[in-house]
Image 1 (cartoon, rainbow over the protein chains, first blue to last red):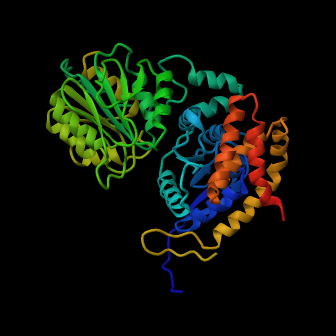
Image 2 (image 1 turned 90 degrees about the vertical axis):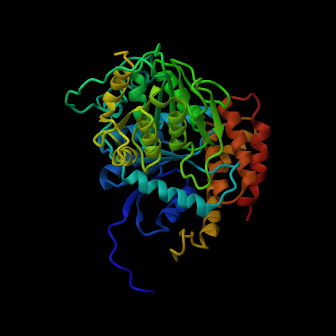
Length: 381
Length: 101
């Protein structure tokens, strides 16, 4: 045994799962590297809420299907009382549960990771490595007290809160983060030739997308293309979830189809969605060798730059890493107007920061201003 | 617990899997009664969660067949299928050896 150098305090994690098998595995997985430590274990949602309030960990790893109090309710209560980055780690069964994952994100969880199930050849070392990687990212996410959780803590019954969250296309959603005060902006010159709004997002993206897309009207003359980094299988849930909440219809993109005006198309998982020509036909291609995030934002943005030049707008929202930055620069170099989410409202100010550093961003905006700026740009405000 | 951080990726301790399988045997013992009831055609209030939990735990301890059987029962119970008892019986058959000692 050699002397180890003094290392910084490990990232403190609370693990929530009703199964002793899972808790034992999770502890071993997390503590296999010394920069992470499990400081507490909870067996149900109620214990989780109390433990998080007492220990104030840097991150919570949360199962959803729990006895006594569900994971969803625990997420809402934690985000209302002691906001902490929560990584959901749950088995998802069928399409409905992919919607559950999105609900968890809307309730304030920062990321979702699927528990291995019968169809996965379980490689515990690989699962453990993925868990650690995602926990490290989650622990760095800035979290805010969540309005939806606040509603509940003010004594509204569960049903009322759920209804507020899922009923029709009202302009102000309860799960939209509270806006910060912004300085007045010089208006954009509207460009009526714009045909496509291309948006990329990663960590913290679903909530940011909800904010932006809620501001766009049903009869928008442009097509909207969204690339959101997301684990295999969750894209249809994301589309269904957004479709319920925003004015425009939201669909998953398919190779060979054309993007439609007034419709939001989400890039499917498993490859990169490329815009082939100015008729907005899209093609799904396999990811590049070594590409870390799939679907990739850079690939889509570059294809948009080639196909549409100045007749597109590029938007890069919150997320870890730098995917999308180079693609946004390509768009800007071809004459497209580009927007980046600002640091104050980004869950992780990674991708938009990388884009700003490359001078790929015309204007950096708080998330609440991105939708209005898009409308201004296309002359619809 | 001997943990080594070597090369690209830390590896889990070698004695983890046997320990997880022991924990799994205890989990089976605690969840089996409710599943036996389901196999008799009277699924109780916890049967769905019991099947759900065992499906995930079985995957962790390297028992894909068991995991599949548990997931199948869970899905039938969630759908409100008319007769989930045969699926429950199949799961119980696979679980019994874990508690026979």
